[in-house]
Image 1 (cartoon, rainbow, N blue to C red):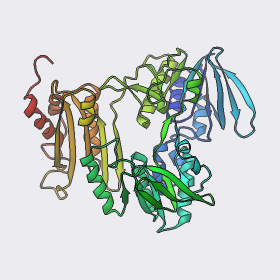
Image 2 (cartoon, rainbow, N blue to C red; image 1 turned 60 degrees about the vertical axis):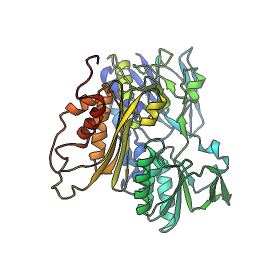
Image 3 (cartoon, rainbow, N blue to C red; image 1 turned 45 degrees about the vertical axis):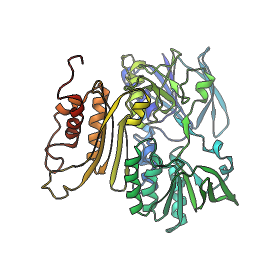
Image 4 (cartoon, rainbow, N blue to C red; image 1 turned 90 degrees about the horizontal axis):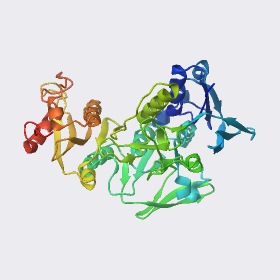
Length: 462
């Protein structure tokens, strides 16, 4: 009986286990997990903190008993300390008893996720009771309880204005706290949006009472009696009652280094289309990995849930005996801030230029419903980037109310995945319904704007 051992029980790891076992029930599948949770959704933690999600267990895709029914040996509270790739064994420690065990494996899967490097950046915070960062599901419980105990009107400071930082804003305000965001760079969402679109989001957040401090890299924290009382930045000091750090994660690659697996620039494990590492008996999935970007062909680190789930499914298929490939991703992401959705996919114009493309861009502020429908004045801020030589789509960014932003960016993401062009976008049969979209959808208008430069049809050479 072939022994499959998976290190990490997040969404990716459990997808491997479930898929492999479904395809080949004779496999002996063991999953080792440090925490007491499996198949969990860390992306839901901001909404648990804000009391939108009522119970922590609601963030589990399946209860642990479901995996036991599938014949998967799921072991909680087990920390893998050493992997012997030559003899195909590994050692793990029981975190309650301290007892160590050794087990053998035929195929190994690394699903160790990402880890925070915050305590290395600011070691003074290690014993501070009111500085938090999200590392596992219990982080949500700890942050919510502390915020509730503080009471309304107290001040929460969020370090970093990326995905985690912005989704925490609304949820902490929902608990009655005042929120200040501190960003090291000169704009919010620096990895997601162009400066002009980021400025629109910033102005919107200010209308919700959010204080935003930019150009202020954090230097240190002042700690008194195990409590942080202020954060010190290059642009001044800021008092707070609690601090949540939304920056500073990296691939959890300690075991990968020990096993001498090939790592990329981010420290993520390089995997091929089958999710194999440079060791033919070791797979890796999820946030610990780097994979190919479908636009540039370069290896990238994208710690996103949808990617981890797909990787788990593909690796599980290959382990279970059904050949499958993970082609890569195009970098699609989205977040919600109060009543607006912010989304992007692919490259910005500036990023494309740095990578050697000759990009052009269509930018607009367009209606998302027929003009005669009440609410038709609602607008989407949309940018679409394409290559000026080939007309191939390179990326998109959008901001606006409701889910229309989300689905329009997903249309571009789908075309990016198949190396689609502006002419493919124009010819996409996007549905029309007056309360959902205008007859001339913003996506189609954008393609027309780009076609002014590139022509009404693709060059014959394409």
